[in-house]
Image (tube, rainbow, N blue to C red):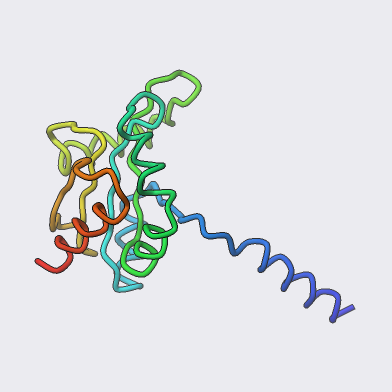
Length: 148
């Protein structure tokens, strides 16, 4: 029985080791994780159901193996979404949380935007969609990290 339990846990672990990145939605959790891991925070402002450039960013950067490999070693990822469709409406508490983050870190309300922060929540650099390749995005993020 114990062997069966061990084998089951091994199989479940293998099934769960996909390459999809985990994006947090709570700023305090992201800061805590960044402190524990020694990583920076990459805060992503998006309009997931209305912003064409945000959706394009998913396919040109976020979902690429190059970005996944780069990000997992350097960043705690924070997803700050502003959907407009009723079926995608955020819970009031999360919507207010995202509004506060936008006021502080993305006051121009440009979408998509990414802000690199240290573990204390201090902005180190920001980028909007400036490149159409994963390599171009990664280079911009590396420049922000190297300058701080």
